[in-house]
Amino acid sequence: MKKALLGVVVLAVLAVAIWQAQRRIAAAADATKKGRPDAPVAVETQPVRTGSIQDIGVFTGSLVPESQFVVAPKAAGWIKDLLVDIGDSVRRNDVIAVLNDEEFRRQVEQAGAELQVAKANAENTAAVLDLARREYERVMALREKQIASAAELDAASATYNAGQAQLKVAQAQVVQKEAALKAAELQLSYTQVRAFWEDGDANRVVGERFVDEGALVSVNQPIVSILENNPLTAVVFVVERDYPKMSVGQEAGVTTDAYPGEVFRGSIRRIAPLLRENSRQARVEIEIANPRQLLKPGMFIRARVEFARIEQATLVPITALVRRDGKQGVFLVESDGAQEPVLRARFVPVTTGIVSGEVAEVKEPALSGAVVTLGNHLLEDGAKVMLPKPPAEAAGNRAKEGAGR
Image (cartoon, rainbow, N blue to C red; front, side, top):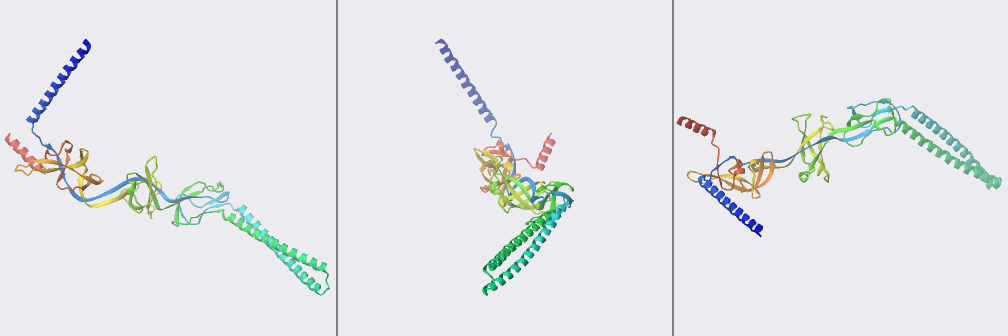
């Protein structure tokens, strides 16, 4: 019981001490306030102006060729001649390599000889069939006159029918040998490895070489890669915030460190219909004309895309924007109109639009005058402010003070 009573007494003493301390602090604050009236805050201002502003997105990426493919042989063999190297220009259907064709030429010769044999056999079979036909017609005429027997007519008919069948077989063999010759000629043509494509620029360039002259290559083994460098494609990735602003056909200015100060013009050609989940970015492809072949695949680039432009926009410096009570706004400097005017800062909530560089567009409300750009973090609505004196006036005041001393 005594311990509980002692605890109550201690708490009461502490409460009285805290109350007295708070009274002393409040009294000191009142005294300071009375001793120091509402002092103006030194600030700097800039005028609200009207001008043009652009919403520009800047993205980084790399250049890739418009198309790229590897040239590989359809037949195996030794590379007898390699006719192109890295950087060489290639036209559609140009021969880039020649394989050793001795074996394939022999196959063509053999297939040609077999075709000649088949044709000779077909001609001989046709001649035999012609004799069998005549014999059949002769026996049939004699049979009608009751000179030849039925057995002779049957034998002649059988020989004629067999000859017809043999001619069909011989003709089929000719067709078969012709197909074999064409196949052998096709295999021979594969020894000339060509770069072929249908659409796009007729002139392309060799990007890489994978084998040397004299190498033994197998079917579909890459020999060189062919690139289409005009136009080129700049691949960039945009974040979710900028994705809705992108549209096919938008113009873009592309720069690269290889050619400082030069801007290559392009336009957006493709926009991916999804954002990658791991990065929340979408792939965007910009087509760039490259007639001078200055740009090369793999170069690092920066792309500037203009999303919007407003010509007569109300503009304020970024440094003028502050937040008060959860609202974004600016402090306008206004005079109270007295004989000795007092400058005060009035907080005006604003709705901003495009932000570019060091300025921001104010959509609402209409603004004019000067806004506080330095010292606004110390201000509240209606606070007194003072502006720095012009250099000439400040110099004059310092001269007067010096003369007085």
